[in-house]
Image 1 (cartoon, helix red, strand yellow):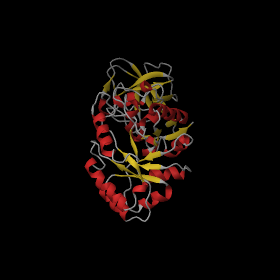
Image 2: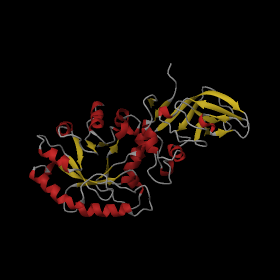
Image 3: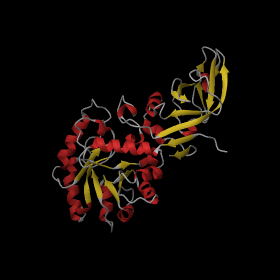
Image 4: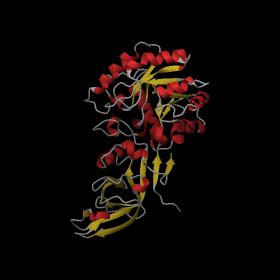
Length: 358
């Protein structure tokens, strides 16, 4: 019998979070970002759960778009990284995938392709990862017109560097750059809105927004948790308590003897570790919960196990399920303790953790 270390996925919470994104987007259409295996939740079940609500999906790469088609879904799928080889353009055209073009090499591939998919252009408004500089757009548009591909161009996208920081002025600066760069082509659509942009006052979202982490209940904003923003956790990560003992005052627990009891302490071992994707750097005092009662981690996280202080849950027994994150303990709380963000925790859960859907 397999161990009962599971990630329970609440698909109704996912749907409600998408509806929250729609409300915050106002009249803007909302595509659902389901890249990285649906942020660790399972791209097939996630996309299928959103099928009746979502007019368009977004992923990072071609294989993720194919996974959506293999789930039987027919919505257009935006490829946020575009294509990685010339022949991929024909596959995009055949399957209604919409690559985002961001490089001269991709334009070269387009010139040599017999089939032209509907596509978007990435504008580098200041993040300096991918995209065409605003000064390059006129030349890029001329190339597309020469190819007779301009009628396959849907619009422009950009990505914000600091939208998670409500105090930053950079988002407004990027918005201004993007708006001026795309102004010569008012008939084309525009998309700028990541999850964080949905929570910025007076931030225009234009024609399409692209929420990701907020769909899964994680916070996109510095200093806020998902529940603070009206979002529900879609994943509850749970593992069994497999052992309990009393650690005497002065005794240590785990590798490196990093935690030493300052009094007799009832502790337990939980069957989950960094081999399952739980963050190794979540140390002593990282919260967890058992039977609805909050407890804390003690010592180092091992590959397959971690230790918890059961002082706050005196009735806890072997076989009880420990919530590592979920409704009692937020994933954003755990991420903060581990010095990271909820995105990394959710996408990092490994294949040996069973996903259970409801």
